[in-house]
Each structure stands twice: as C-alpha cells, then as structure tokens.
Image (spheres, rainbow, N blue to C red):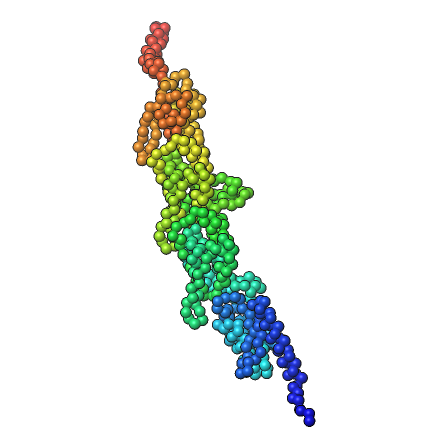
Length: 492
C-alpha cells in the first residue's frame, strides 16, 4: 500500500530553498567581513530578525537623523532602496509609510521594518546596512588649542565614523602639554550609564596601533589631560603628529631678561633655510617650515646679551587648568653637544625668561658670541684721538683692541698707553675704567675686555698734545692782539 506524500506548493519550496541558501551564504560572509549583513530565518515563534551591518564598536551603532541606510527586502526589489533618516528620526518606506528608527541599532531597525511589512509579506526578510553615517557632535576639553563642541563630518560616501584624531584636528590640535597616554572618551550608553574609554595615542604614534584611534559616537566627550611635566624629547615627536597644532599659526609670546629687545612678540614659523627677521616675521621662502622655537624667539628679540646665562633659561607655560608649568632649558647643551631637544618648540602665550649669569667664562663667551641666537653686531662708540672716531658695529664679545683697530687705530695725538671705558650697567649705573692697552694680549678682562652693546671708549690725547693745546690756547689771543696792534700802527 502506497503512502500519500505531502507535496508542498512550488512557491513555498522555492522560498525555503532560497532562504536556506541565503542564510548559509550570509553566515559565511559574516565570518569573513563583520560589516556584511547577516540574514537569519524566521524563528519558530514567528519573529522576524533583520540582517544587520555595523562598524566594530563596543556598543552597536544607533541610528539618528541624517544617517543614510540601505533597506533590502529579500525577493522584493520594489520595496528595497537607499533611504535617509528624516529629522524626526523616521524612514519613509514604500507601501508602509513612516517607520521610526531613531535611537535603534541596525538590528532593531530591521526588526521594526520587518514588523511593518509583515502585514504585506508572509515572511519578510529585511537587511539594513549603514551607507553613510550622519555627522556626529562631540565635546573636546583639556589640552587642545580650541576646546569646545564640534560637529565632525564624515567623508562623502564613506561608512567609516570619525575618529579621535580627526576630532582633535578640528579643535586646533593638542598642545605641547598634552598627556597622550591617558586620554579619556566618555560615552553615554543606551542604558543611561556613562562609559569611560581610556586610550593611549602615544602608543598610536610609536607603534601605529590603530585600536587606540577609536571611532566616535554622537554625544562623546574627549578629555586630554595635562602632563605632569614636559618631556623635551617627546615634544619634538608630538609637534610632528597629524593631530598636533598647526605650526603655520603665529604665536604670541613674551621674552624677558638678557636679550637686547625684551617684550611681547608675535613669532611665526620659519623656513629651515631662512633666518629670523627683525620684526619676528618668517622669511619662509624655500625649505621646510620649522615651528617657532626658543632660539627663533631669541633672534626676534635681538639676540642674547653677553652676560646671559643660557644654562638656566626658563619657559613659563600656562595649562588649561590655569596653573603655571616651568620648563628648564640649557642652550649650552645645544651648542656643545648638539642636543636639539633643548630648542623647545613654543606654544601660544609662553614666556621665555633669560637670567643674568653669576660668572662669565671667557672661553664660553666666545662660543656663545658666534651662536645663531646671538646678535649679528653690537654698537660701540669710540671717541677721541683715533683716525675715524664715531659709532662702529662689531660682532658681540669683540675685544677692546679690535674696536680700536676698527676705527683706524690711534692718531698722532693719542695717548697710546691707556684708554677709558664707560659702560652703562643693567641696573642703570655707569662705570668708568682706565684700561691699559696692550695689542699683544688676547681677550681678558684687565687689558683687553670684551665689549658690550653701547659701550663708549674714550682715547685721551697724550701729555705733549695736551701741553701744546694749552699753550696754543694761551698764545692764540696774544697773537691776535699783536696783529690788531700792528694794523693800528700802520693806519696811523
């Protein structure tokens, strides 16, 4: 006796066959690329589970106004297509009208759409894909140049959400005082609890660890803490980062102490082949732009004075919290060992303090005088019995003998054994010294001291010249009288 077979309708057989192959294919794709939609068959309870695509995050992406998504209805192409979430957070779909998806994950949105289509389709299978995320709004605080609230756009046609470094670029970049190792991203979960994500962008710079440059969600807050102290070596690497401050922007700084023109300055980036100008503007023609540094600022302020202590330079820097951080700089290491980390990269509103040296080493003064941050020349006034008296320009730390030779040397009336040196001191007092001249001596404080800006050297006339001038003063009126008397006798 033959048993009766239950024969399914052709459409139902085809449907389940297509469903099985679709499920198998989607599951395989999901193991290869997590962003590919995963299709699931209807459950035994009749529920419809949508296939979802989403970026990798700790918490699934939630939809909002401005998102562009793709809604794919299996085997019903007329209901499929690209859609944009409207201002009210809804989608306008064919046949079923508005479906609210605001605040839903892609999976939940697919379920909501499937429920609406269940009145038209027996077994609706919905795939929802994110095509272009909406611009997100984040808050950025701490050690960035322009803290505040920002709308971070996504690239046209891109499905990748903006990252932390992209947001930092919009905020003007991080400051030189940023602690990249303990950056915090605060995010509100759907449950209402706050999640704090700690990231290490220093590891990102050193090893290229992209996991540290996490993608952002709308409503995130990024906090960049202040470093306890500035590491000179790390400062150079930080300045070269893509999310650091724009080095072409002018800086407002102050320079006080032992420079020739102390005061506030606007300093710009310079070309690596150029030199600093008198006004502090970059000459940047050709070469690579270098960010403003201490030596650049000193050049703009006229250069250091001979009595400057370049071992104890300080940079005073304000943190975002309003506190002051002091950074110690030793430019002698730069001159002696080539330690470029001592040439600190400055940031806006820095104050550079150059103290007076307690003791000046003659040998060191000579090396400092030819440094790039020393002035090109100083003014010395040589008066009296020289061949070309007047103001001469000589290099810094020029010895007295060289300044005398620059005026042509003594004339025949000069007292050649000694000269007088008149100097205006930093405290406003004036000193006068008698210096014995010995052209065979090298630079030394007793017989051939190094000159300073605005020094006055007076060359006195010799004793014989003084006697002759005095005698001439006495004789000249007598000769004039006798000449007049002789003329009177002739007229008679």
